[in-house]
Length: 181
Ligand code: FES
Image 1 (cartoon, rainbow, N blue to C red):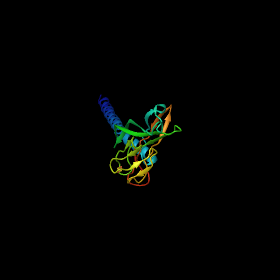
Image 2 (image 1 turned 180 degrees about the horizontal axis):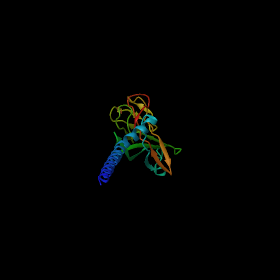
Image 3 (image 1 turned 90 degrees about the horizontal axis):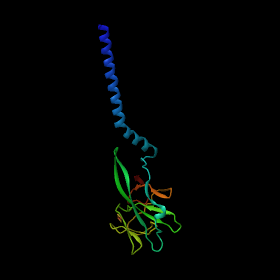
Image 4 (image 1 turned 180 degrees about the vertical axis):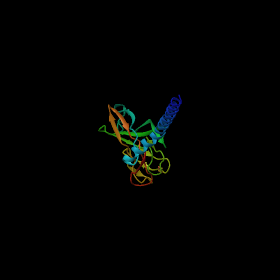
């Protein structure tokens, strides 16, 4: 009788021990996984590389040189990560379809000090409102304090859809230095 009671106590203690370890392990995994995931994917390249963002069907992009010079602006929603929390953010990029139908996608950020520049249809030039840097439709600096041309972004075409990798670069320097996504 006494032996039975002792066995029951031991089983109960083992059960609580195993349950506690199980719950603790599951909690650690749930809380720790996003951080580990972030660290592992960061260690491959120095930055964690997000997926490319789907932009537009390639055939829907108008020619940027005929009948007039005119780039196209496209918006998309990307997922950003702050610490290990994910949130949605709207972004835009400039797309230039060359006469041979090849594509160039520019970051919307002026490489001088990070303002957003616009397309001026009368001048057929990109102009930044902050300090008047001026760029051609090909992204070359025409005038102003910009230390380099407009930054192109990596693109992919899959099933006739254009995808872009939104990258951010250091401003105010002549080299294109990646600082994030
Ligand atoms: S930020 Fe564009 S010219 Fe200065």
